[in-house]
Amino acid sequence: MPEADVLEARSLAAQLLGWETRGPGDTANAMRRIATRYGVPYSAQWALRYRPPKRVWSDILRALQAAHAAERERQLRKLAHDVEITARVAGAHHPAVVAAEAVLRAGGAAAGMDAQALDPRAPSGRSRSAEAVTRD
View (cartoon, rainbow, N blue to C red):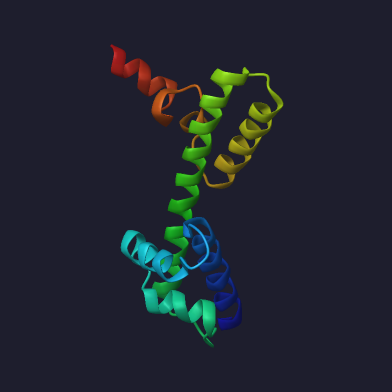
């Protein structure tokens, strides 16, 4: 199933690059940042983007999967922080807050994360139980 692995690797690399790119002309720099942060070689990212290989080595695929999971969790934490701020400003029943909380519940469950860890009302992304332990 090398074709399926190549398609998965290309998809993961494209999503990572989309999340990391800051604007036009930043593709190479974004690939370097991903390589530094997650250990996915720049050359592998470049090859997946510009000349798809016939096969992908398992270590590259695992690195891309781990990087994608870590970045997804980071994006969900950022969204939880934004929801917290928006809830303070616009109120907890604002349609944007309700929609974002639904995304957090769905995204956190799909990523295998604890739902309370992404609770926008919990300080700094910690669960309420962790906050209670800290206060005692």
